[in-house]
Each structure stands twice: as C-alpha cells, then as structure tokens.
Amino acid sequence: MNEIEIEGRTGKGSDTEDDVVHIIPVVQETATVQRSVRESGSVAIHKTVHERTEVVDQPRSWEEVEVERVAVNRVVDAPIPVRYEGDTMIISLLEEVVVVEKRLLLREEVHIRKLHKEEHEAKEMQLREERVEIVRNEGADDAS
Image (cartoon, rainbow, N blue to C red):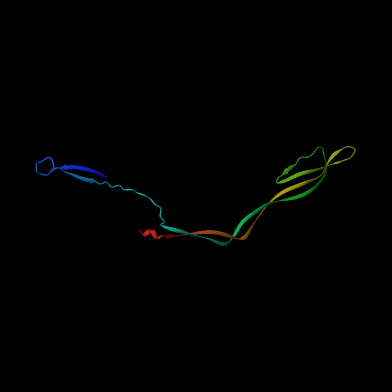
C-alpha cells in the first residue's frame, strides 16, 4: 500500500509546532481471473442393434467349358498351332505313325468353347443395423 503525505497548517500564523502532517493511504485494487473446470452434466449413450430380413437378389455369373473331341485322321506336314474359330479354341493332337515313311497324322482335334451363363438367385438374409440414442443429463451445478 502506498501513502501520500500532505502538510497542512492551522490558521494561527506560526510555522513551528502547529504544523500538521496528514497521511492519506492510497489503496489500489487488483483483480485476478482464474478458470476452473466443473461438471455441468453428463451424457448417456444407448446403442441398439436391429435385425431385419431382406431379400437380396444379385445376379450370379460363371463360365462353363464344353469339350468336344472331333476325329480328323488326316496326314499333315508340320505341327498345327493352337487356333481360335470364334469363341472356340482348337488344340490339335498329333500322333506319329510308322509307315515306309514317317508322316504326321492328325488324329483328332479338341474343340473348347466358353459358354457364359447367368442366373438370379434370391436369398433371404439377416441384416443388422446399429442405432445410437444420446440423452443429456443436466447436472446440479447449473443453478449457480
């Protein structure tokens, strides 16, 4: 605390004993701000899982292979590479035969054709779904 000193005189005209010293205290206030954490309430969360039956219709697709053996029995001069005719792959099977001279005899061909198939198959499935409910509980400290 600070003090201010003031000299004053009485009205008697003398400069000695009658001089009065007045001390006036000077007060200064300061403010302090503080923060604190207080609970103002709480929250309750409820989670539930609901199941429902739903028909799911998804197309299923696959490929099947059809193998057909075709007898040829023809003499060829050189091996025949794998070839395609449309969507059919043809693999030549060769056999060496002994005659007065050696020749390649095309014994048979294997024709492989891809067939694309698709069907719909509906199935009942159990599907689950989660739901959340949030409830706020107000605390007793809210009144202050």
